[in-house]
Image (cartoon, rainbow, N blue to C red):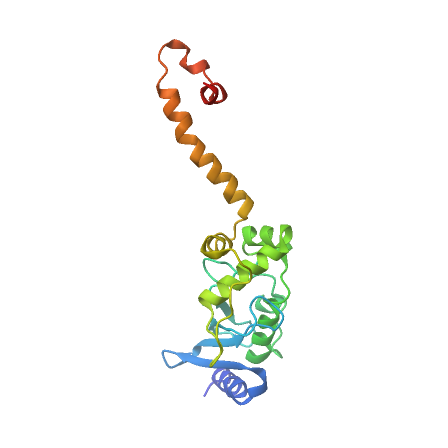
Length: 219
């Protein structure tokens, strides 16, 4: 048994035996070097209580180099790609910040803490980071919506109600990470557009290029 194999086998056992850590590890295709980790979102955050899964690859040079980890569960967070699950602003996942004394358990606990401490200046997803910095309350509503949709509820738990009222329309806007006021403004432009176009088409002659929307709407 190689040193790498002994080390990762010991670390998986440690995660499984430490019930207080609330971390679980499963093998992917029975391989000790391709794992699926899971942990609960931190209390007091939009991710609270539900289970998040991550994909873990153990490199050939482990423990001299860090794990390769990405989220499997979709997460609305500045430092997690909403497309690929890639993670930014976690130094221990970079060779410069990694140390062989770190373990699988400490890595997952640190990753869990990232959910409660967004770092918009090193964003993996710039649009989510912008939402976080410009409207924190709306960001938290969207993050909570994503958690309800994509994370796995704690066993025996009942999914929480939406963060605020407003019905399905608000939920769709929030889930998309959009501002309600911006959507309303866009709708107003869309509904106005066909009227402008239809009225403009009634004009004939060389002067059509000099007829502006404001005039069309007035007439």
